[in-house]
Image 1 (tube, rainbow, N blue to C red):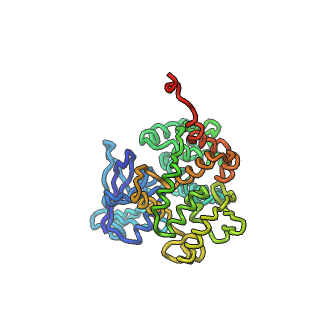
Image 2: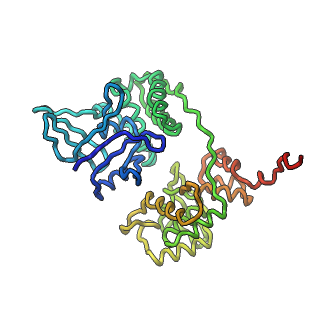
Length: 390
C-alpha cells in the first residue's frame, strides 16, 4: 500500500499531507491524531507541521532547505539497497526502521533519552491528575521542543535556546500564539520538576496574546439553526449545547445520572480544570431529551455513536452542524463553540449577573467571563452617536 507524505499550505498554515489508499482502520487512526483534519478538496488527511510529525512521517529537508516529498510503504519492504518499513501502532505513533546490509538502526527517531524523558514527564502529569487531553498536549509540545534540540541534553538547554526556538521555529512557521503558549506551559512545568537545569524558568516569557472577541450569533440565528435540524438526536445535542452553554467535550461525556429532571438541573462532572458544576435545564430541553430517549434508548452515554455504549464522535457532531448550516441562510463559519458564546452573551443581555454567568460556564476567573461584555449589544445599541445630533 503506497503512501505519500508532503508539506502543503492549507489556509495559510503549513501542514503535512498524508495520501494513502483509504481504509476504515487507517482512517480511524488518522482521526485520532492530534490536530488531524480531512481535506474534502484534496482528498487527503493533513496534520500540523511540527518537528515531531516530520519525524513520524520522515519529512526530509534538502540542503537548499526545501522539504522533499517522501514516498513510503506500509508493512511492505522496499526492494532496494536500503529497505524501509513503516509500522503503525495502535496509539498512532510511527516507527521508521532502516535496515542497511546486516545492520539495523533507527533513523529520524528521538534518541532513547528523549523518549525516556517524555515518558517520565507523562507519568508525572498523570500522577498529578492532569486530564488526558492536557497530558497529550503538554507531552507533544515538550517533545517538539526537545526534538528541536535533540543534539543537546535537556539539562543544558538555556533561555537563549528557548528564544532561538521561538524565533527560528514558531515565528518562522507562523504558528499561533496559543500554540506558543502551550509550549511555554509544557516547558515551565517540565523544568520546574527537574533539579539539574541551566534554563531559568522565571525568565521564560509568554507571548503577547491577541485580544480576540468571541463570535456570537443573534437569537434569531440560533433559532434558525435549531429549527433546521430534523433528526431528533442531532437536535437534542445542539439544543443542549446552547441551552446549557456546554463545551463539545462536556456534552459528549454526559451520562443519564448527570440529569436531575426533578430539580431541572444538569450536573457536569470533571469539566475543564477537573471541575464539577451545575447548570439549569430548560423544561423545553427535557421534553426534547425524553423524545430522543424514546427513539434511541442509549445505554451508557447520553449520546452514543453507531456502536452501543460508545461515545458519540466530536468530528461527527461538527459535521452535523455544518450540514445544518447549509440548510439555512447563515453564511458565517459557525462552530459548536459559537453556541456556548451565544448562550453567555444572551444571558448577559437578558440581565443575568456576570458572577452567575461565570459559575454557569465554569470559568475560574471573572476576567474570562468579562469578555462577553464587549460583544453584548444591549448597552451599545442605547448609545446615541454624536453624528445623529448634528
